[in-house]
Image 1 (cartoon, one colour):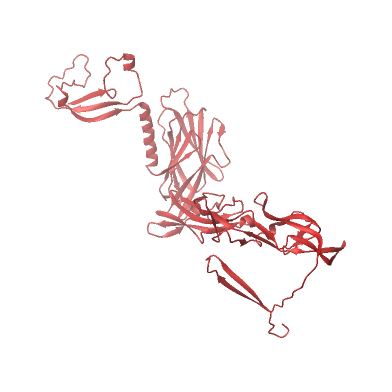
Image 2 (cartoon, helix red, strand yellow):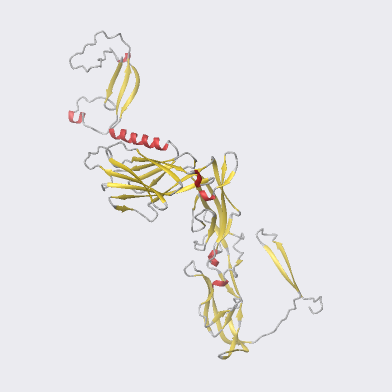
Length: 509
């Protein structure tokens, strides 16, 4: 015999409570406790007045004769609807790892991250909240033609929306449109803020479209009642589907070096470092999947990565702060690999110095020009120095050469970006020597196309106060020797010494 005992709350006591409050519908959880007891066979099964057909009144003498089976929770209708929707979504996604993509507050896309094996589809769950104000919503998906096959299935079973599917093509893309029309005449009893799965998509990669692996970009957007909502030229959002022809265990990006010296800030010429992404199979074999991965730099103000993920580079537009571990991430579905790069940037302002910052007129020296004889002024060589630095994880500055006392000569790197502020006072010759032209004051600057302003500079004075040459030295050079030696105190320093020989060994030398 089965006994059912109903408990309306935590304690079933409702005595002395007004009926309006006793039976008021409130947000509480109700339970049915199931018991059983054994008794003799009931001989008389004739119904008594008021007895429900098929039920027998429990005449157990005491609670001690009842054995508890379980407690059953009575769920509200909304919970059942939400559970049904969740089960539909679980059926679509099969409990696999998923990624969420929100098109707007009303539309959520959930899909498998992959990579999935060829022949197996990626499931995509399209979910919609019905609290949008328009009469209908159109969710569109666009994928490049010839890469995948798609099958769409409606999954919404309630009377909240009428869902229809449409498939079309343009010259380059396959397009799936999901039309969701709201029934205005139906009284909705569900919570409109809950996500309802309306469509389950199966996306399968075509074998002839790729080699080892392939990544496909799917562009999504949503429209409401003829009014385009959050539509950009490439769609409101992008999901990435990944496929492979073998079981891939992990991916590993490989580079020739883990260091980039950002001279692009000085030269306006990019500095690049090639990268290859390898897929590692379960049997230990590796394959090149660079073309199939997606990638991004965690800080593009330090280092960038090309759109095809094959090159790391700096182009001079960076912030000027280096990093001892600039991270670049590579993704193939749920598989992730990363690189930690040392990026060294020049310290700004640069140290610009002249052999002589005051250029005097040379007494008695004249230069013949079309305008006649003009005085000759001194000239000076230019040197530009800087430190290459990077910040560690604690924000502390580290130096490429190990100490702030060491500078790098970057004169040749910036020679095309040297400018004299007033070219009437001084100018630069073809070897970037500074030449005085007439008395006055001006400045020498190192400019940059990428940065507003200047990277460094120094002051120049040209004066009419004459100077006289003190001596003239001549050195005979018959040959040149060069020696290279590393520094005993610093592993990053190499010293090159050039020696001029002045002994003539051959006739007519």
